[in-house]
Length: 293
Image 1 (cartoon, helix red, strand yellow):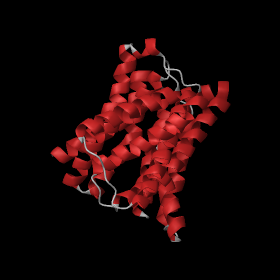
Image 2 (cartoon, one colour):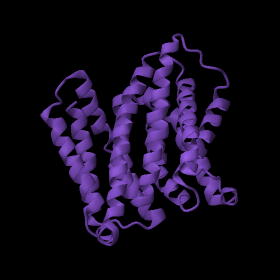
Image 3 (cartoon, helix red, strand yellow):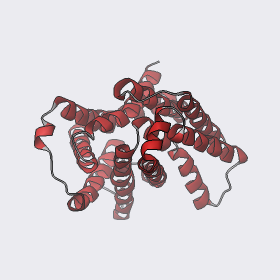
């Protein structure tokens, strides 16, 4: 029972991150949120495991650099910018398609053709994404007024999902090194922060110190840095250890639905029939494609 509780709490936190970031965007830029979040997360992991990770082979460093560049810096930057164009519920559902891109990339690299079930699941999930993105109700109204803006958000979210596919395969490689999980994650965070630091001048990084004093700002940054980035790493690994990777991964399918519900409750985004059907198609497609890999 404890394993199921840990998995459920973890995916709930991950689902709410889209809403939390959307709230922060009213006060901070996408890059400011990104850098602050992972700086907090890095410090939390340093406190949790205050020792240095020594790599047995220096050639392994390039994998950490690639993981930091793709899964920390680029993925979350694309996601944060997408949230400036589209509702949190839309971005959350689109990004949930990341496992599909991971499957396609893995198949391309291994030169193994995915099964028909995978492609059927991919089509169903993409149909669900389209329904949520451009379906009726409030989203249709928003698209009619400024569809180009929402379309840009959807495209950025799809780019983030594709970037996550690269990161997933890189982290699989890192996992094969048999290193301490917390220390490996901290090293990935460090590389991500380095790439962010190099990009800061191009994004006009200028911390909004008065905004950082607001409870809703530092509270959400603490939630993203301590909760979603640091604590959830620990809780998810405990859940996988207790339940096994197959059972634990089933909880990931709840993220799109939980994101939509949280967006409706906190941000007042509309829950229309097309959104409900779109979420069901996306989740069903993900489950089907997972069986087909």
